[in-house]
Amino acid sequence: MKPGGSDCSRIGRPPPTGGSEIGQSEMADEELTDIMVDMEFGELMKDCIEDWSDDENSDREDRSENGNEWDDLNFISECHNAYDYYGESDAETVLNDESLDAPDSGESQSSIIMSEIMKMTLTSHDVAYDFYNSYARDNGFSIRRNKVRQGKRDSKLLTEEGHSRRLRAETRCFYEAHLTVKLDQKRGVWYVERFEDKHSHMLAGPDEVPFLWSHRKIKEYQKHEIMSMGTAGIRIHDMMDCFISKHVWYGGVGFTRHEIYNLCAKEKRKLLPKGDATTAIGIMASRKQRDPSFFFEYKLDKEGHLNRMFWCDSQSRHDYEDFGDVLVFDSTYKMNRYGMPFIPFVGLNNHRKTTIFGCAVVSDETEETYVWLLQTFLRSMCQKMPKSVITDADTAMIKAIREVLPDVWHRICTWHIEKNMKMHLSHKSLKEFRTLLYYSTSTTTFEERWHAFSKRCQSEKTVAWLRRMYKKRRLWVAAYLTEGFWLGMKSNQRSESLKSCLHLHLDSEMTLVDMILQYENAVVRIRENEARDDCTASQSLPVPVTSSRKLEIAVSHVFTPANFYMLQDDLNKIDDMEIVEIKLGDGSQ
Image (cartoon, rainbow, N blue to C red):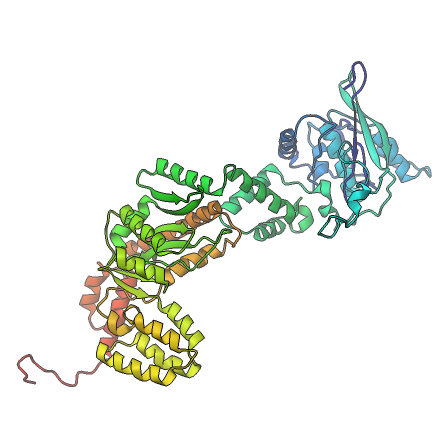
């Protein structure tokens, strides 16, 4: 601002169109409501006057983050209802109704537009920017503040020398179109000093305008919606689909998918000011403050990097106390940018549904790491041992379980065995191998069948695998596992189901903080389902249908529906049996 004079600002348009400078005027609401004039720069519609207050406030708040200097600001403005800014009773632009009436003379429409714009006065540069951006939207070009990279790129930036990527296309074209406004200090209003509407490029069509730079802006309320959807685990492309569905077409949204990606990346960087691992540990510490029974432990390597971490909340510890007879976990799923195995500890609740006991991330899969992990898990659960454990076939994990849980039944997940046997055995041999895996016999009978099977199927390709499987036979053969307590489980599908649920929302590039937040979302969903099952069990009773109705009625008041129906199925099988012979204990019939 010059002393005793006027403060001048200029706006030009960014890629892919020409430039412009801006000005502003005041318009009374009662004057605007009767105006509906179709000109080259668009229509002023009296019915498009709804969101002025919220949009104006949010736009100005966003601009204030970048500074208050008019000459140095570079804005992205919302496009789909910018004329709404002048449709409220507190509108800041004033036009002359009579001057907008099309004369009967042969004067060109463009001359009328230029004449009316030159007569405008505006109360602030923000209103001037909004006006010119609306004008640009209706005519198919984009605008920018003047003092931001004027003209074209330097010639040295337009050569492939020193560049490994394809050069970015040029979007600056030494534009002539501009709108210049100055401040009249005596009256305290801005007026249009210069207006040029000549363009040195092809203007964008209506379907292209939403992709122009100055017409892509996320409003404050939309930002809150996006962050809420991100917290709920909704993917970015699904977020955009939601906005498009709400606004009927992509042009009504006011921004593109690119802006959502940028916003989410920006917010993610705010979460990680001190590094991913440090932020993750900070999240755990804050959980501990809110929940005194929250448990977490971590270990750093020599360089100070996070090496391993385990955590569980008070509800998980309570669930393990009630349902911790069978513990299921595996480390085969790596779902973060560091390739660190994600290891959930899960079990089966009284509704025969997955319940969460804890979670861990580790940097390696050595025996030492698994020993630390199991010992930490037991500390968190007051040294209560499970009756049985189901894991994958990792050798380091098997050794760690033998050391930390020597008296606990242990079996290898049958899903992993099925996967491996298809890789090593011929199709004809699979059925016979499954009988050894699933059908319970005496150990002597198994040994006889195994030797016969390995003799028939042994080859250079299978000999090593068959030898390894025989050494681990006590961990997968049904004949050796019949005495164990498994609650009907033979695989770690409970752990897999949790990770598949997480995988719907996450990818291999997520941070540790992302993983922790999405893991907690998954836990919330699992506990919601458990509460719904509890409600069903307490507010209803299964219907008895077998001949043992008295038993069913008694059991229905004790068992949850899931367990009741298992018993009912067994009773139905008993009803289908025919008694052929009854033998008494003394040998008589």
